Length: 408
Image 1: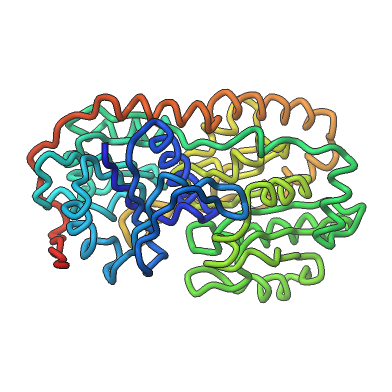
Image 2: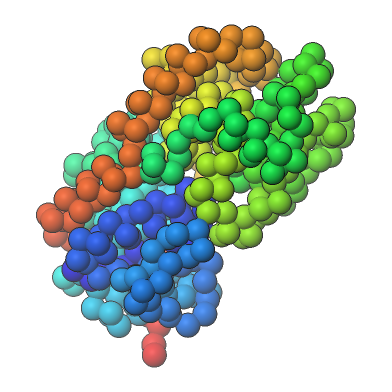
């Protein structure tokens, strides 16, 4: 089949980018012809024969197509469907992004929608999102159950995948080497975070939890793999300065938006996790949460908000799901949570004080993550799914979005 994948770029290191690459690679290796619409690429189409990125991502068999001027590709996707005689269009993104696809004259083309839900509530305007696709994919059991409560067709649970051969624990000597390379103090207690600096991640609360912990623990440092300042997030250096921890906070040199996301190979990400004693994510909500799983596979304990997907990962004593203070609506109608800052700080203290108990926890967490979220297993599920995709159904009106027919 000829498959058009519409999502974030397959060379990116973020959650959407990694999963777009994983499923594209799996389908290409299974013999399908893949066309990938890269939402950060606007040059000419790139056709690969034998090629790979410096980080080792194979690109042979994939065609990268440029994005257009519209936010979700509605000005170029109609043209690509016709130009490349597409059999299946596969979208990966938030639930409100790609509803225009149902309004296109799809003909034989079927639509597989891979959604993420970063809330624990449903918004009425999303209902059509569960009616229009030929197949509906959700990456967590919680979100699949939530979608099934309103969907008129079966919802398929398909987790995101992480490669356990890359994301693996390190030896004590490796940890020393990695920390020296990062410029971290040799004997420090490192709390790390891998996240985009945006409102949903609530990184301001991590800064407060770290400050409460650090003021009682002189060896504590905070390692942030994110942009220090974002218009849609926080000025994290200012928060650190206000709380007297600026000299204890480290930002990676490959973490800025559209730089680190594009050029941090998986092996470097593994080294980053292995520098940590704790991976902390004060998220308001996660549709999946790839960094949580990557940290689990690297043998690093997780402390994260007990909301949306997090209990699914960290329940049964596989980590530290922290209760929330409150849940508030955001602009899309979904709801995000605010983690309890003092309890997050207490979890840091427990991990530092109880290495033997934590060792049992991280072994259990890695075994679970490898069993449930191995990229090889997930890839096989994608290939099987594409063997029997339902026919396209009559669309239900949604959002009033209209696709633009591009010429050329």
